[in-house]
Length: 169
Image (cartoon, rainbow, N blue to C red; front, top):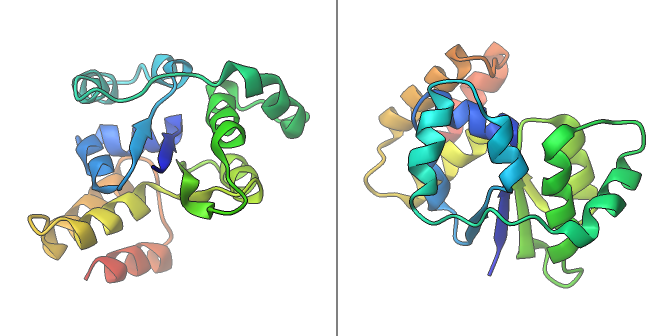
């Protein structure tokens, strides 16, 4: 079963627009490490995350891999996002690239996770996936979600926004 680690930046993006439940479109176990949850204090994301946690997500931290993740990052201080990379280290499988995935907007986290063998996506990828997998989420609704995320801080260039919107259609 795929383990999908969600970083603080993606939580912020989806939580600000009340769309954390779109993470459930993934076929796998959603993991939001406790330090990542603790980092999210901005409203309405914090309230939306508290409600989403009630669905029984995994909040465990792969402690045995924290130091290895920190050493791989060198001078980069990612704060609690290091727990996401520790999860990648703990669950990666060279024979199955889909064994672990990461949802993050942070370029350093994304590059490192991909280099370690994880699949990576962003909050926009979550919306696209949900639009493809969920027959109840219409493309027009998904486009509105992409635009709302864009308006709440995770700004896309015009070209990238149209690409994200186009992939939903």
